[in-house]
Image (cartoon, rainbow, N blue to C red; front, side, top):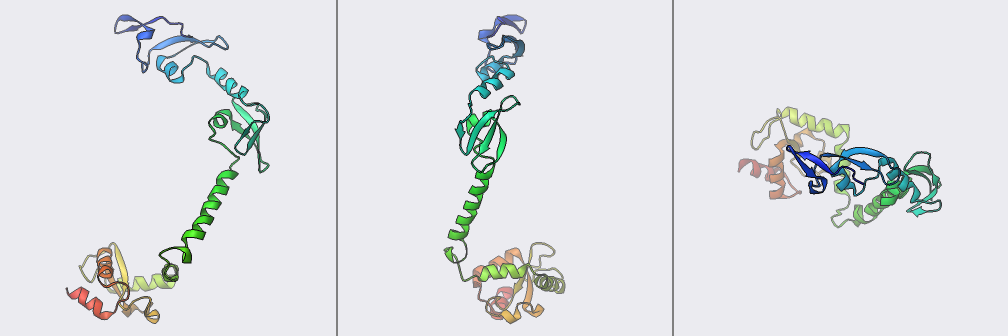
Length: 231
């Protein structure tokens, strides 16, 4: 309970009951469980909703969980030697200490295996329902194979040679030095033998590259590129 009856406020004595719930004025309180007297900010009492000391609050959490209590996958075995914690056994067999506050709020439901299992299930469902031939945009794996090829050293060397030959300059707008793409003049999918031919590569900035494929699609050739550059 609150022992202080009034506090000084701008040179006047004001009743504690008239203070704002956000007031940081210090008041004396007594813990109803252990009778400890301490000084705390008035706002803390209002936020917590009680005058109990921290030790008694933690002890009360401990009392809430008797051996055998089940929370998620955790079963309480006994109280821990640490105040406010319980020793629990997970359904997977792991024994660990868990904060009673976490058990009470059900923010901890396992030793960690539940989160791992959920992650595995989500990945499995994603792989089963949204990848490769099960995805609505699946086109036979061309994009996947191309992305793999683009990570190889030989492909990166080809792209570097194209950039160096063109002096790192877009052949459409003359932008130089950043956001550059190595474009295949003769389409990548339709002309596999020309994929790593430096003469079949040309430097375009990202914006021009996107604009080109929006206009001509993916199945392109020299005529498409000449038309694009000349316009």
